[in-house]
Image (tube, helix red, strand yellow):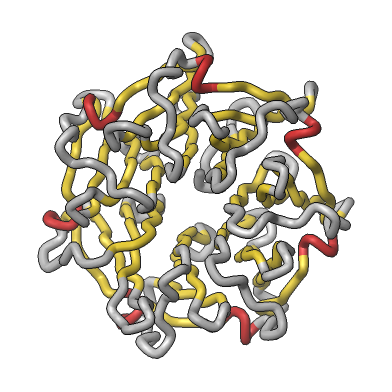
Length: 395
């Protein structure tokens, strides 16, 4: 969720999948602390478990105070939604069926992404089909769920070797951005590309790596990509990891177009590269105009490259700062971050070797601290499955 979007009840929500394919929620309120819900069961979706390699995506739609958790099922490759409203509780939808997209099955092991466009009150869920094309399931109040083949709509797009995808909206110009990377080189690395939409121009394609002059710094085959915005200066930021474990940024400003930064070098973090296959997550803190890019090293430590206007790019070992050395991220753990703007806090979540969800949280008064959220919520009997995804948001 964009940090600039309104919240309505000051709650936090972190989602994962258990070994039975059920989606679970750890949620926090100031008055009650951390709680646990099996939202698959609450939504009556026990017959539609998540696939073993499913991603999970969560987002809120503030205009109607609803929550949405998206995953891929284990049998048909359909996209499913568990959604919550204050009056109706948790419910279940087969979005592929509702959108008439049952022939556009989701590719195994590919990305899944969701975001909202608040100016027109729409929801957008993106995935890669078995045919290699990027599809969008999108919802509007007037038309319900529909499907688009974004690759075909963006003239000139190919469907070659698409790996992970990521998407976001730029609220200041009413645009949508869906990013992906592909394998073109012998080592499996390749460029980061963008499918972007404007009301006047429809869907278009950009090779962001080439536009930024970063052809010599391709995205590693095992790297995720992650995008976010900084609304105070109307910039876009797309992060990835290269073959050396260095974090890079492709960033856009209206006056300067796309440019490239080697964030690891700029932050002086060459001695702390990302582990092969490390997750990656970036976000902005609008109350202090800072940027944050997180990854995991070979020891399971979470690292942060962070930027301030006065100090440039800097490096922190968040695991060490939070005193969480005895609770490292398990190899292959996902990484997810969000901010709670009502109290100016940052939250970075990961999974340990027992399937427990952990949080590294920052407040101005207390610095970085560590919480075992699974234990805090009393959810020890419902651990995350090995390889579970992770996604969080605030309401």
